[in-house]
Image 1 (cartoon, rainbow, N blue to C red):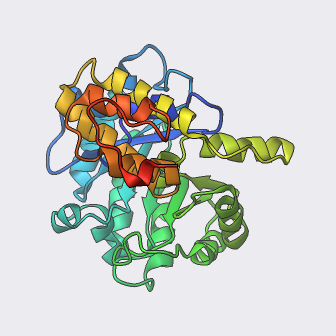
Image 2 (cartoon, helix red, strand yellow):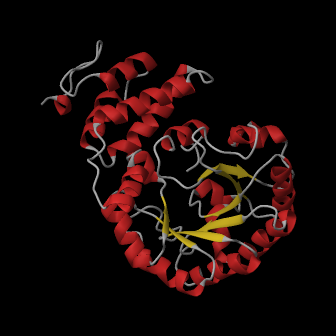
Amino acid sequence: MEGVIDSVTRDLLTRSPGFDWVVTEFVRVVDARLPPRVFHKHCPELQAEGAPVTPSGVPVALQLLGSDPEALAANARQALRLGATGLDLNFGCPAKMVNRHDGGASLLRDPRRVHAAVAAVHAAVGDEIPVTAKIRLGFADRRLALACALATEDAGARRLVVHGRTRDEGYRPPAHWEWIGRIRQRLSIPVVANGDIWTLEDYWKARTLSGCRDVMLGRGALADPRLAARIRHWQATGERLPETPWGVRAAILADFAALQRSTLPDRVVTSLLKQWLSHMRQRDDEAARRFQALKRITDLDTLLEGLATTPAEPAAGMTASPALTV
């Protein structure tokens, strides 16, 4: 989730009850201990008094990505000194650039390297804070999926998130939740299911097929910012909340822009706003229509106006698109 789950997004997604914890974008570790400013950039919640939490009080775990055990250990100690209360190790990123530089899912080709990375971080922080990990079902195939999972547990991880695809499968559906179940049956630490959880029905299927008590939301939370709240409400009452209306989505995007433009140039905020709208369009027809009509807009205020208009009403300066007619 690099580039899309910064502190502003974490704030907005956790304003409604639903999430038990959140994870930062990864801090890239190469061969040296990073200065505090790098950690504060990725996790400004570290600079608040007390434990790092979102403004609504949801705990924030700091995520590290790297392959050198000594460098990971040094940065784990740095994170601990800065106030981190949880460290998550990323062995799941499928990005080619990251994998070419020996990070993320590239380590899944050798369970011994996964073990060495987790063990080094665990030794660095001891029992002061929990170390967790995220993996996929292997790199090119699933033959080493269980071995990698067992390696994280043996090395000291207290929880494991499993994305239900290999690196080579990327994000192509389906996610193999039943394979997550095979891993869960062999581990004694909690296993969390991840991948293709877009709806309440997906949540239930993922839990049923994997046997996992908990799930992690990534792209699904961006596509529907109220998905976690919908799941939590169903857990508590057995009732289904209505689908998230466009007005609520537009308000979240407007809040996102207002918070981001206080520190970033408008052109950057415009790009980030379109990026989130693009995630929303995957599962919402109105968001898809808006994206199609607004994707070439370069002025932030015009873009925001286009998000705020009613579905049949184009913003000033915009050409009405057939996709927006009712």
